[in-house]
Amino acid sequence: MPSAPQAERCTLCPRACGAERTPESPGFCGADELWRDFRVARVMLHHWEEPFICGSRGSGAVFFSGCALRCTFCQNLSVSQGRSGDRISPQALAAATVPLLQNGAHNLNLVTPSHYADRVPAWLDALKAMPAWRARPVPVVWNSGAYETPAAIAALAGSVDIFLPDMKFASPTLAGELAAAPDYAPVALAAIRAMLRLQPDAVFAADGLLKRGVVIRHLVLPGHWRDSLEVLRLLAAFIPARTPLSLMCQYTPQETHLPGHPELDRRLTTWEYRQVLDAALDLGFTHILGQDRTSASAAYTPDFAERLRPGRC
Image 1 (tube, rainbow, N blue to C red):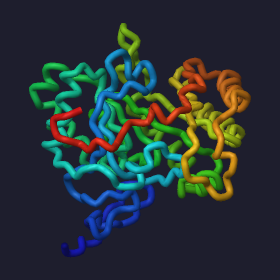
Image 2: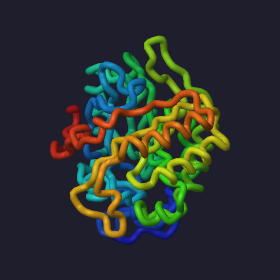
Image 3: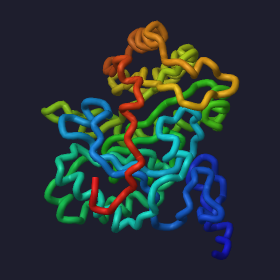
């Protein structure tokens, strides 16, 4: 395969790595399909999101392969960094989502889609023209790590109803060591600002499900609750207090130990989590979602061993 001209190389994410996104020269994110296709690990009804996302019938999740972050504690490591999944055309992916609608999914949940932000709007336009969508339209969820450019987010105007970003770190040292992204905090905060410009208000249906808005997630890491407090202070400086804030205690130690971070070989303590919850209340957040510590279990990680088959979920 000939090399792509420099103008055709990828600068979509904040890394602007300039990759050709070919099998021989994939991007930092692992993507090797520059122009139109996707790589997808699983299409499924997902029941383990926030209650107002998954509801009673589940969220229609599309798990994209690859990621522009290198989170050492990622629960979906085989997908985010192992490049597992199947290359699939936009048409085949649209067909694979139809069973989600037919089986009652409350929304279409695009999980880690940032490295496909350039093609998602056109794909959604085609999907929304299909009879199955016209018969039962649902909100579209952008479920990302927030390591994205404001320009990429702005291009999603009219395509995405709900933004579900993480806000992972405040410390550049911690972000560099655990995600290979020392610039994470300013990049993510700028992306969240862009999301709030598109969907400034959380709007709920009569049944309690979220129809549109921004929900910010933060995973509290063992030994790093003070960084979590700084994350909350950064957010409180600009987001509306009514913005839903999901504080997660579901960190699950990985099988491989992390050199220099022995604290990540254990689960979060109740005391650590309580410090963060109390701080969110003190900062005036009015819509806080907490978790029970039983959520810290690998049982809630989707099984990616079953490869994607168009038309299945």
